[in-house]
Length: 254
Ligand code: HEC
Image (cartoon, rainbow, N blue to C red; front, side, top):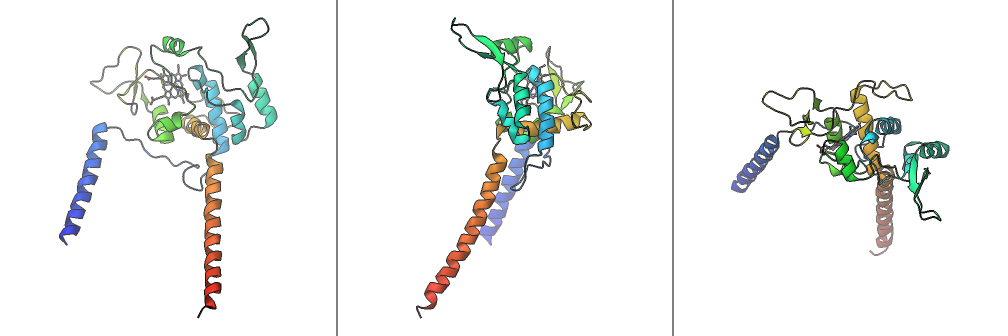
């Protein structure tokens, strides 16, 4: 009985402590429901395609995705000729040629997305000193993953709460650590015009681009989940067979 009491007490304490830890950070990231969450969830390809459109038309002005080959988009339904056309729209540096010079050529699906700035210093110089991080793995690099991305993109406020003074060039964001962020509130209603006719609210764009960034950070997640389910099914069947065999073999022993 005493053991039980102390177990309950320590559990309550642990919960209480966890509660204060969260409260002192002060930032709550609401969990969203994503079609890709859970064991059976898969990436919503239409949403990821729209998210790519948002990345291309809005985010890529400042953010690179230098780890992602263009052909990766095949995983969200881009066809080969679409990939080729898309890639050809980018200029990538190649070379050196016979004269030892680097030159620009149209991209191919095997190329990675070109970066908007030649180097980090140039990126900082264009952004008031703040470095726009590469977005290739951002969905994995931030605690809360896509829930955080969504909360961040919809978390900007035009006027900071009373008593908060923003440093020059900074913007207020509800969930960014420290609340002062070098990125402007970039998503605007109808800021993009979706190819599939979906209404481009800020919420929709934030969801779509978060879905796209989740896919980009782990393009093979769906396939891995499917493999996992198959493996479990296989193990269940195997266990059944082994049990049946065991019964059959031992039935003659007595
Ligand atoms: C005008 C340039 C600009 C554009 C356009 C822009 N960003 Fe940013 N972004 C920045 C800068 C600068 C930072 C770094 C901010 C800092 O560290 O204070 C940043 C930071 C971020 C972060 C990291 C936040 C964190 O927790 O560290 C994410 C995620 C992000 N941007 C996503 C996006 C997405 C998605 C888009 C497109 C919808 C976008 N950004 C468009 C400039 C931009």
